[in-house]
Length: 484
Image (cartoon, rainbow, N blue to C red; front, side):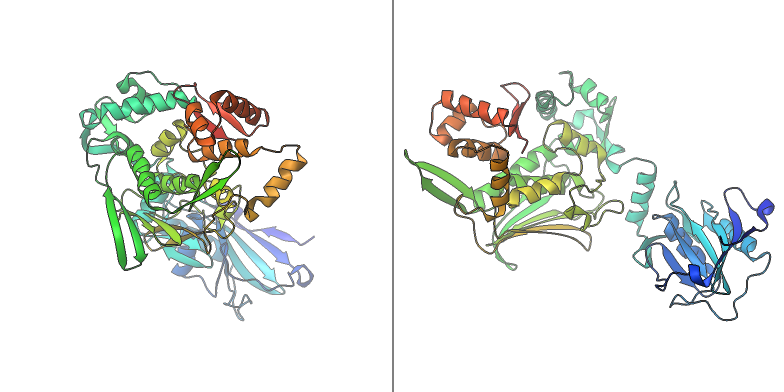
């Protein structure tokens, strides 16, 4: 075992400590150390060391190796005195706000001694060095913008911008009819129960306090122009606009209006088959995926930014842009996984859409989008952070025109056969319709499928027995949830 000697431990500030640990040549890793998200090299102790420590404290923690060159090798002639570690710790403590106290070590790297200062993620962020705030990104320190500083502070306090009072607005500025519709939808969804009284219901959800309303309440139920736009356009080329429209209103209304605009303009293929003749509509894009992306843009946009949400529809692709990048340490790459951790920029707004059943559990949105486009053989999903915001794109090379060409879901069909589930054509149409319109009624399904209501009821019962669909809420006012 390597020999460790504690030094100056009694003189150290609370939570900080210095120690020496020896690493023999045989214990040294064969691969040379590299700078990364959690490691930085410095040839000597300077203010740059403290800058890196604050960047680590504002991220996921990390260490600075002092006396190591850019190649990860010990610097010749570098020495550490008996009181050196103590002086470094004290200087870091005095030059950071709030004060951070790093762990201090000396490490014998193959016979040469280097210093190590390390910190964990600080619980109260952001930490400043000389009035500036940094965050570790890959192998470099990133100077935070005022908006990023504000985001870190709100996250640290477990608050969100939408929970703050709406400046100059009172309860009288809210549309009571929108609040009543919201209460009906919440109670129908069954995830929470509200009283019919608008005042007590909003207070129960912390959207209001007396006559004072939050930013979330104003955005969800405000009368008239709420001050934030959604700009939609149909484009032939990036510079040739066929038509466009500007939306501005309460968020629940805006989501519905986005979908109305898109459904009216995207291409639709018709598949005729069966006896009696059945006509199946195949939309250019899966409508549930479009709605999920629209919801994501509305719920997670940064409402401190004056930039509009932008939705652009082209001949073979559609793009959504919203101001505000991903929250926390979430990256576009993380969204490709099925178990990514979600962060809500606007917690009260996200909760409102969750209670109405418009979104499922947090962090499932892009999983649902990927599942929807899997039935579109040539369609690809692209997500990326770009200057000032977040961009999502759906693009295809060949429009889907037949339900019999389902390369993207062949495996799903095979799995269904393995499970002993073989849906009839009518059951598949019912299931597809419920995905597109969760609030579709039995009479409407009868008209779409072309069979009487009694047979619709029998097929829906089978789908429920198969575990493919379940009913959320009452017969009147509830909706269908496709579970598989």
